[in-house]
Every structure is written in C-alpha cells, then in structure tokens.
Image (cartoon, rainbow, N blue to C red):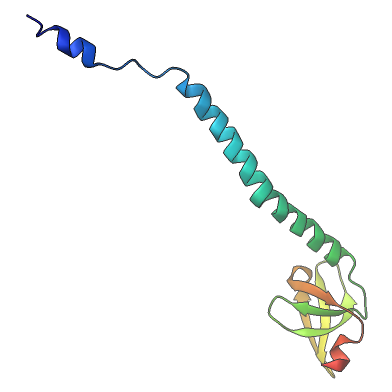
Length: 108
C-alpha cells in the first residue's frame, strides 16, 4: 500500500532565506529611487532658492506664467516687475522661474 506515501513525496521543501533577499531588494530599490528622483529634485530646489535670493533691481526675469520683464523692486516675499513701459506687476518671489541675461528683453 503505497497510497499514504505519495502525498509526502509530492510536498516541496519550504524556501530558505527568502526574507533576507526581500529586504535587500527593498533597500536597493529605495537607493535607486533616492538617486533617480529625490536627489535631483533637491538640487533643483536649492538652485531655485539661490536664484530667488540673488534677485536684484534691474534683473530681467521670466515668471512661471510666461511674463517677461525687468525687476523694479525687491521685497521680502514679493517682487515688482515692469512688463511694459509704465505697466508694473507685483508677484511672489517664488513665481520667478528664470533670470535672463542683460539686454535679452530689448532684442525680443
């Protein structure tokens, strides 16, 4: 009677060391996400903060909305930008996206 013996032979042994490889895989994935996503974003934020801190009267800037103009006044949180002769707009400093080279607006 070999009947009770066949289910015992068909069972596989439980996997060994499965938990440790899963932890290693999670650490590798987190490291990859850090270097591919988090670190570049932090670098961009740092560059933008430096750009905002260096704003001065007379700088030519482009805002997030696409307005281009010359900085007339710099406050603690706001910047006044002249976008046309006698047309001034007050914006938050964070809305400044880019500082243009001097003379860029005259050539456009």
